[in-house]
Amino acid sequence: MLRYQLIESLTRIILYLYFFSLIDLAGLIRKAYREVFDRFVYDLVTLAVIIDPIGTAAIFAALSQSTPPGGRRAMAVRGTAIAAGICVAFAFGGEALLRAMGVSLAAFQAAGGALLFLLATDMVFAHESGLRQPTRAEADEAQRSVDISVFPLAIPLIAGPGALTSLVLLMRQADGAIEAQALVLLALAAVMGLTCTALLGAGRLLRLLGVTGAHVVSRVLGVVLAALAAELLLSGIRLGLGL
Image (tube, rainbow, N blue to C red; front, top):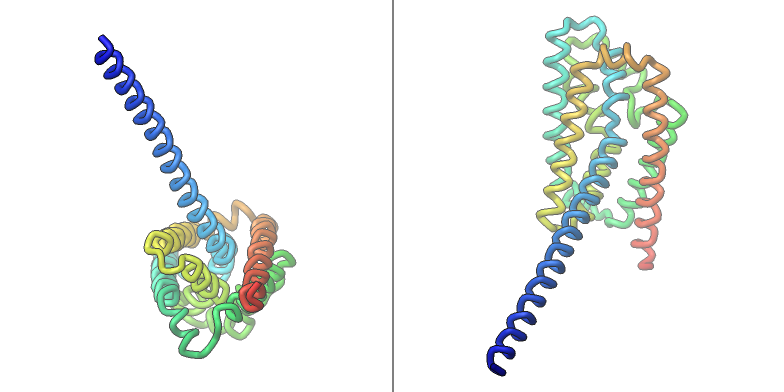
């Protein structure tokens, strides 16, 4: 009788331990998924705010007014594909290029934060500058060009200085982890998909939002970008000072 009671007690203890281990395992899985999701959202928001699909589509619509619809669609797809290739190449080779030039990560991160803050200022106050829009000379050249998919659509409207800088910083924050790098590339693919969709419907999107609506969206994104830029700038300063 005593032996049966002992076996029953041991069985209960084993079942309790198994049950609580499952609870702990489920909690660890939820925590891991939440960390992955938060990291993906951070990468996605950063790239979406900088590339600004709606603002890019508005500029593309203005530059391609005289192009037939079929040609406009072809330029939108080709320009997005070229920009995506440039972004991926810079994401993997940008840091090596910086090392070859003798530029430290702290200096690049601080300079990148300052550059993105200037870009955010342009977005909030709707200033036209070479950071996110072609200059007047570049716009005149684009108007005379039959195909604007490479210039100025792919560079600098989509794969501009802000986007390339952000990709290098995001890949550096991944610190060589394949999973984190995959999240950056997944976020880039999602933003490129949104950008291509916005470019394909640029005319309808501009008619729907109007110039004022496009500026409102751009200004809201500019405020978010300013906060991200300030964080990057402060992180670069702390890293440089060893704090």
